Image 1: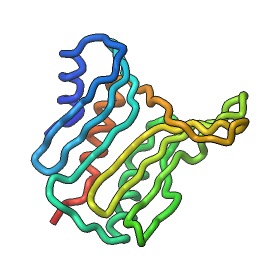
Image 2: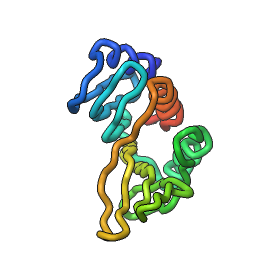
Image 3: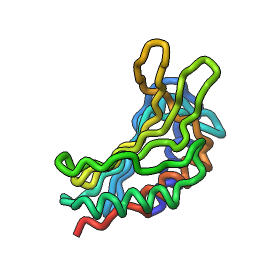
Image 4: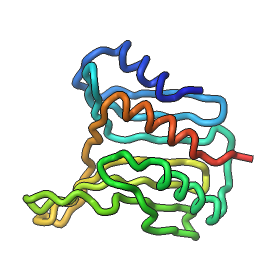
Amino acid sequence: MDFGQKATSILEGWGAFDEERRLEIEGERISIDGDVAAADRLSCSLSGLRLRLREPAALDPEDLKQWGDRIAGRIRYLLEALETVELDVPQGKLLLRSTPPEKRPDGSVLYYELQLSSAGELELSRRRYDGAARAVAPDRMHVTREVLQKLLNDLAATAPSSS
């Protein structure tokens, strides 16, 4: 299934908007959903993207590392590259972040955060660290429709098999 083309078709059907909408795409093996905050003819703003294996999974730490490596090797076109930061074996989670993150003149730092779980779930978001407040808050991912299409297809292609 072409997840990117399906997402583009849904966005085209919605037209331009400036309120949160949920994008949901079901495939045979995986499902992808995202929170689209706004869109126009060429681009959209996302609060987050999630991918889930439809069949229950129990990925071991090596499976998680391999999945993270596939993502880091394939998705090199976002604002920053993604690299593995931490493997939490007891929690069954792998964390990837932007390397290096985007540092703004005001002291804030923006980065992508991607979490993989042993249950076969992926969550991609954008974060903003405010140095003055010493706090992290969600930020929107702004992508063209072309980048969104490629991103969804690449996330789907890197997903482990659930068997």
